[in-house]
Image (cartoon, rainbow, N blue to C red; front, side, top):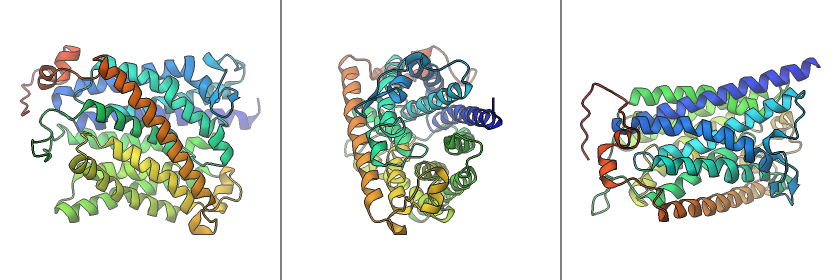
Length: 419
């Protein structure tokens, strides 16, 4: 086996391990941003995202995503890795990398539907997303499908992963409805603070660390000249998002809110994910700064104007910033960076490329949004009619830990809740 193949395989596996670790980050963030009485439920949903997601992606999802294309819309073979020669370890490594991505898309929803969704209903959703919904989008963009043919660039998944997860979260939260006590009869919103901000901060650090595997790993080659640029852009976009979100809420609310600052970092990371290999570091900072402000405005709008209850801000962080990050490629791409990642002659609107790339990015965003929202609204609507979606009022008041799992996250402590 050639040394380059060995190095590439090891690099893909290391990146996969980093992305796998992000599930711990999601679990910590979501547990910290919600109430103590629902901690076990949050942890179980994140844990089972991995278990269900990996298996369903193995049996069905990978074939739909990377199998031979039927008209550019869906793969038709390669299920259960039957087309992979066991001696080709690099292809197995690629499957693992894509599988942890699929599970990541699914786990985004768990925070948005936190504290009121039935556990078995969540498992059904997770299976459908990782087996069908996500892989079809992935085929369009990464599997040689019709959006790839148009020239859409989504290097590490602002749309494929984050928008799919965030828009699925939007469909779920709309049909679930808000948590008890979240909104008053006059429509005003009540804050429901998370029980452990330290846990949330730790989770964000884990996510940020894992993101280097998420983005830089998408080069799929240890010798890619784009790796260093991607890593730098990922680091500074997250930093810029945290800074702009903190400053924005500090000016608006007179306090540097921690939870919004953490979400600002995640917003910067999501925003740079599509273009991390095709933009300059300076552009990455600008994209991160915009993402940090955008997530702050978006979370406020969903809560106060649309009265959509998203306990962790997942719709805004992943859905809205995923859309923005994908469109940002059409503005900020530069050919001298894009060429390093294999995209020849790509320039965004701000660098003399006109609006052609932006138009392709827009078509991709709209198409994926239509597919994801339409299919997931249908899935959650059927689950709601089948009474598989929301727990009862009594179960929600007592907490999902006791009612759904028969245990508490903090045994030996008396937890008081004001509902």
